[in-house]
Length: 99
Image 1 (cartoon, rainbow, N blue to C red):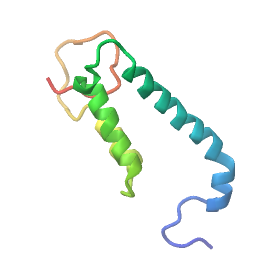
Image 2 (cartoon, rainbow, N blue to C red; image 1 turned 30 degrees about the horizontal axis):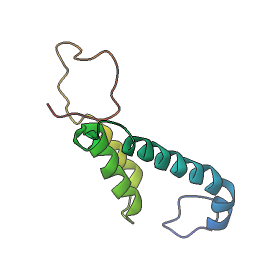
Image 3 (cartoon, rainbow, N blue to C red; image 1 turned 90 degrees about the vertical axis):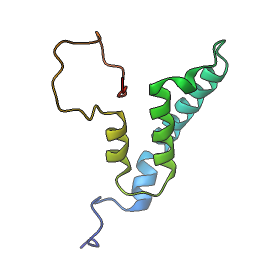
Image 4 (cartoon, one colour; image 1 turned 180 degrees about the vertical axis):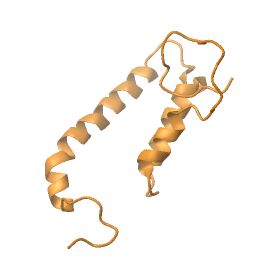
């Protein structure tokens, strides 16, 4: 029925028709976020570990690499397996920060 490599039951055209606008909106939201960062008084976001991960994720998105979702998830995830003795922060930061 489907080629061996196909795992999505939708056709490419149907997928585009269904999801293009919502993903276009997401890209515009990202562009607006980056524009706001550019207009801040303090221009040091390139030093922030979250923004470094964010820009790496954008590179993955623009590539034709397989498993972009997995690669981006791993980019933001904590790779350590040892439990912490105590929490070192009150809330999640959204990206892993090597200390």
